[in-house]
Amino acid sequence: MAPKNNNPAYVLGVGLTKFIKPRGQRQYPEMGFEAGVKAMLDAQINYDDVETGVACYCYGDTTSGQRIFYQFGMSSIPIYNTNNACATGSTGLHLARTLIKNGAIDCALVIGFEQMQPGSIKSVWHDRPSPMGLSMRMMADTRGVDKSPPNAQYFANAGKEYMEKYGAEARDFAEIARISHEHSQRNPYAQFQQKYTLEEIENAPMIHYPLTKLQCSPTSDGAGAAVIVSQKFLDERPHLKSQAILMAGQTLFTDSPQLYSKSSMDLVGYDMTKRAAQAALKEAGVSPKDIKVCELHDCFSANELILLEGLGFSEPGKAHEMVRRGDITYGGKGPIVNPSGGLISKGHPLGATGLAQCAELTWQLRGWANNRLAEGADVALQHNLGLGGAVVVTVYKRADGAKNSKMSDEQVKKSSQFEYNPAVEARYVSKEDGEKVRSRKNRNDYALADTEEKIQSRL
Image 1 (tube, one colour):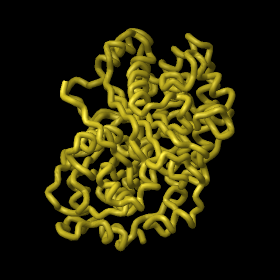
Image 2: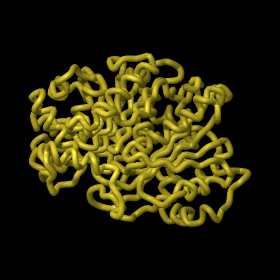
Image 3: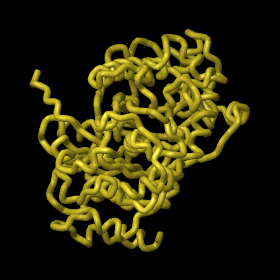
Image 4: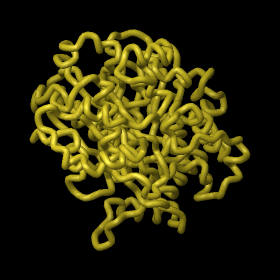
């Protein structure tokens, strides 16, 4: 094997759009532009500093990334267009980190976005084998196939297996959703920000037992972005060290032969996640007990429950007991899981999800998320999963090694280029914001024409 380099990589800037219902209200070039502008403003850079662009999306034509990035500048840099199912956003982060770790570049801009169709996720290809074809056959052979959405069936079956093995109950999955919806009230970017009682969640329309509608992530439109930089890049800007977040450990894994073991849990990535988490934690030099806050890929509440164990937060067969004790929310033993509201409430624009998780944990470790802070956190974990399959587990630490402390909105404004605290308030970008970060050397206004009209109409 080739020797592995280990140049540190840092998240220096993040940006998000609001996640919204997929109703054609916004187009992907505009959403990607907004997220990218915010991330570069946060990192206090100009597009001329960016050496590589990574675009992350599942639904869209080839080179959609260029359509977004050309709005910032046409500097001839490499632009990668990535697709790895629901793990697409974190796959983009992994690509950027890999380039920086190996000394190829010092600064990358990663933008994840999705413009989706209403309703459950469906394939757009009907004239070729599906990547999930063998998994669907395995599910049919082991649990049978119903008329409900296939993804709901996969994860509901994983939940049933956990119930059969360890005595979890349907109410445990509903409680996870209750907590996620409660958390989402304090996330200004969340698609849904409504609190529900446990009974309301249990009595919502059944999608596939034991999962009701309020335990399933919605389809969404939205975008997220992150600026990833090297140690050298950060050292040249020492005033930004307090906001830089170290990507201390990260693993992108695909399935092992365990996928086809006839276990419904392994069919949705339990084994893959477990191995990836162990590797990422080892690289970061921490254990699951060190994690204070986590963004976990809760596409369905059943996935969160089984992966509380898969990520090492609970003993085998005890994840439902964690949920019952309230360990996964504020005031519990921890870690606090999905303070953003998770995919269930925040929304799930596939390519943007990994970037949204990264943004939330960045704000948590900085202390900017002052209305939902996991106080005293110094290590965070991100889990992003895609059936088919791929999983990315990332462990983050503050660059200065300190624990987070709550920053007021005024403190955030003084230490950043924002006139507000973006962790607790979702504002649109202005033309002036774009001017600050667009290339000074290689801009072309024609590339921005459509988006500029939309910016003016929204202000």
